[in-house]
Image (cartoon, rainbow, N blue to C red; front, side, top):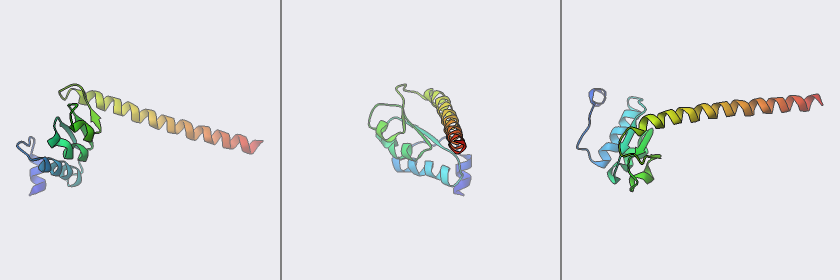
Length: 113
């Protein structure tokens, strides 16, 4: 029944800090959903750490727990973060390919000498 509630629920309100962290962990573990969390206070720290994408919308104590911090005080930063994250991942993959190709070329040139 818990998984059915997780699937149907769209908005969760009036939750304690521990309940927020448990909800994020349940969405990720039980339903295999990558879950993001935006928070602006100390009561969001547990959920920000548990989420696949945790964004602190303040420069207060929650910014220490969150992997990402935004100076913009609304969720418009999520789109920018996803675009920059995708670009960073593409760059990392291309760099890995370059390093592997360079190593293979060096190996071949050493064996020919």
